Image (cartoon, rainbow, N blue to C red):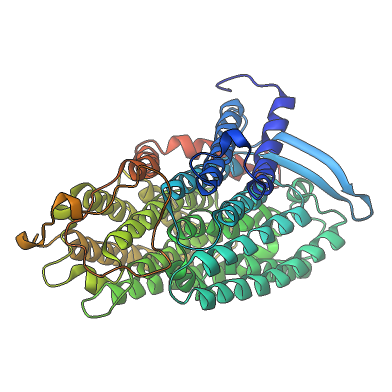
Length: 554
């Protein structure tokens, strides 16, 4: 069933447009603006260009989803298959199924919302032209990662996002941005070198880099030893990007230093590339190798769940001088642990839970980083002790809508039933209760129990954050005259102050502004929709996962 019947050639064009348009937009962003589009100044013109390009990509992605045949989500659709390097049998092979389509939509949505937010709240830093161009290159690389069906093209797209994110952190970030950017690039590049060796091993031993053909073969053309080596090599590269404990240490530094939109894209989109690689490549292409490493992957996953939660609890306690952005970053380590645990079960239930948790994490953590960035803009700091102060930050009293939305995002993150965060974690734990044949049930049930304990720790630190930031007395003497209040940002781009500190006390706070509501409301609405109607997402992923695990057989 398709909502609107769109011809195959138009679908092919739409997918190619979605992948290529941001790259062309990045080039255009560096050119002088046409006379009719200059706006009030060149900076406004290029920011408007970013909103336009990302908006066009989002619309094309939505049309692609509307034309997608939902009766056959396991079938590759909108496929393009052209020879690129005949000597190596490398092809420009694009296509989407029920696994990749939600990730395309998430990427296009988050990038558009970041571009819209940046139009009004541009991070302090160098040229806006470079900022917009880097965001568009980042979008193109991420969309390509989820759309390509050739292993070498996957690797190129996987690497394409590193340089733009490095510069977004290093040039538009806050304190310690250079060190954080270098740590990010070194970790991910070292992981990628090892991953490339694994990809070449699979391609040379199987005679093809085509991901569809390799998935259909289901590892029958690869010996067990080759599969084990390939999973170890490729898995290390993917685990760094996920990030899996103990390869996670670049993430808190990168998030703490990155500008608000950089943190949103890093958590909401880039982390998904690693887990997507596990599902799209390793599960179907090297099942014997995955079966060998699955218990170890699950063990690292549950350690990450507990470790991330304990780190958050340590940052949240009074007197710890914990940075709120850093706390949300450590929470990502725990949430991505659930995704890895679901993948390690090698069951349809677990893998579907992992894919659902991927999308839920992108929506909820993207919203959390937007909110923390807004709080930092208003207070001039993200330090929890400074925010709480003697009487609490009292967001409920000072900026009630902002406080309410922060509390909503926090309870969604802890997995409250009825919101998106619940279903991924629950299905992952169900998958661990009954893992795939050949995996130790006692071991995985132990992992399930540890993961369930991690959900309690998650609830603990999120509720502590809500209590310290949202609750508290509203000092009556702190009111300012209307002329002294935080400036409105409706007239055009404003530096957000991500790169520089403002005074640590802002007694009277502006509540949610119109542009902030426009950027945040879709994420909150989708969090509720996915929680109340999970069948929309699971109806897409489940047939595709069943086919993938069955070796290409529906």
